[in-house]
Image 1 (cartoon, rainbow, N blue to C red):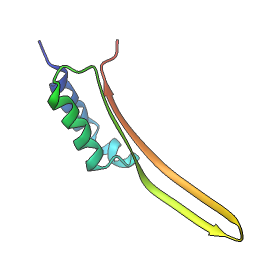
Image 2: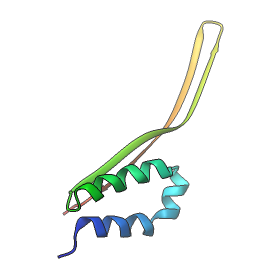
Image 3: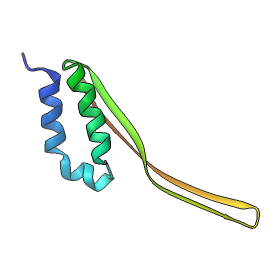
Length: 77
């Protein structure tokens, strides 16, 4: 029986370039890896992080833009 941990590792390696293009950081990957290493047969692992922020204030107005990346690896039917 293959553990979900082994499959998750394979998927993270397989889609490494695409995740880099989206903006997934090493920190997010480490958090997800730690989750499935603690419980190797877990159904789902996820983490999210704000990777870029822009905040501007002028004349009583505020502009704020946030780029958030969420990485989820889960077993689906």
